[in-house]
Length: 547
Image (cartoon, rainbow, N blue to C red; front, top):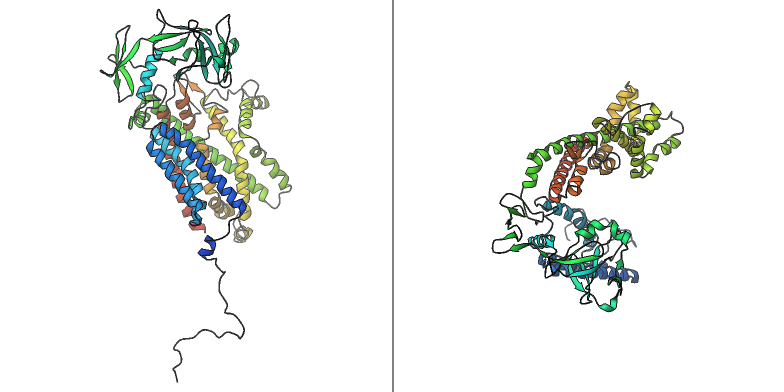
């Protein structure tokens, strides 16, 4: 007779019953991999993969032409990876994660890296292209008409909108009767069958693929017409008025032996300086046409040490913090106060008041900013007329700053009111009632229970609001445009934020400085990231206390 089992055995099953299986049944990996594909899913997959292939082919040709072999390799590898991923029945999670990851890289990571790389260059007006581009620009800009220069009948044309499209010179040679089209990329001959030439003036009166400008349209763009230079083998073609053009000779030429540019009329020489990306003469004069070079930490040093940049930078930084903190803090306090008032059970008609109070949030912000700008007008503004004031709101530094903070208060409190209302409704009334039973006053109950729980829920939103207001370019550009400006510094105003100051550096009337603007952008990114990281760490500690 065998010995009984030492441990407890399986529970006996009732006759005729199947063993009970715990948990939900799981589909096997094999079954998932061989699941049937619907016709709709197949069509969508084919269309999307075809679109990927088309985009890859379209992007490959410019990369090949520019000889960007690393970029081409990345493009091929990415395309091959996508085809492998979506033609295979494996890697199900990756099918959902990869598109978002690619968009994150394309629209977030890549712009940040490109901005960071630009900060280490002199990229800007006069330093946009390569050294070869600069040499061509130097020579073509020095073109002058000389005896014997070929003259052409000129017609101004464009391939786009007459007011904004790229300009093209349509040229007819009165001696040879040949017709040409010229732009900044060079001169090309046209087929005589594709154009119509006036027998009286000799000008081209129609051309396939071009929109001809009339005298009025050409006159409105006379500056752009004068600036257009068409490079040729013999020199360059420039306009002489609106109806004539000539092929002149360049008086400045590049000499590879000395790596310099020489002026044939004056004999002056400008030698290439690879550190600054410019041709520099012995007396320090630089030619306006330069090229893009790496400058290391020069832009960062300029921002921190150059008095012309560092003084407005640090002054703007201090006001930037004050504006972001005031905008976030005041909107939070006002929104929370209104939410507390409407949360009271004694308050009647709360739905009506809530609809009325969120109206500023429903209006387009840029339109409201323009309206507020007019309301602050000194002569006919609503505020001065309503309260009998005579305040030049945008004429003084502090009055302009107070004005933009007030505008932000009106625009921002509905958002804080909405989120505070939601957070208040999530706080159990038993907690506040318990403090009342213990003898706490309403203020003590609010300070000990309601406010801490509100801050736990709203701290991430306050951090996001601070980051948004730190870079709130619309609030400044649509109201004060950064002003008022000091007479000795027209590039930096009293209400400028770092983002508007950066915008003015990048696209200012005195010339774009993209490298310097990118440097300020890096500082902005570092400041906002640091403040956000510290704030989120404190928020997590607060959550641990009240969880």
